[in-house]
Length: 155
Image (cartoon, rainbow, N blue to C red; front, side, top):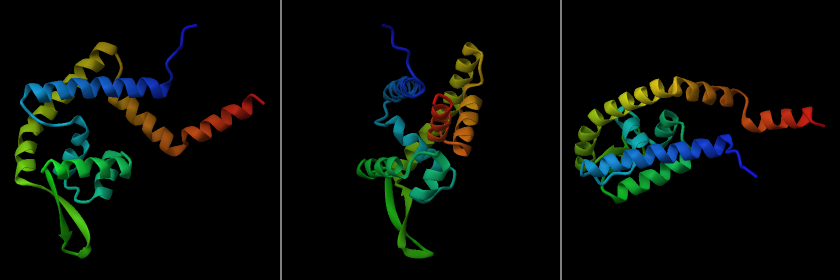
């Protein structure tokens, strides 16, 4: 019996393929860098300062961002510092090493979006637009609700 991959499986597999390719290029560039750092780096480059702001910018879970931030602090790319407006809270800042890495990554990210464009041309679909529309639809009516509705149709 042939198993047909479901949405979650295909999304995870596609993400793995993208991350593997990106990490290979980072190694080729001589960087000790994980693809999972990119949402944090891009959010910080865009002005985010806290885990919450990075979570909002990236749409990843707070747990995933916190875990990634911890790894980046261990690697010496980030540091926590008290926020001027509320010393009980901390802001994240790139270390000198993190800033140097960001300068190397920003031109590479432009190439990544060009590569995505070639992928979209090859498959004949605006992949980023489709994923964005999918995310918006699921934010409006979650997958659990959709499953419940379909289950109700089969009773």
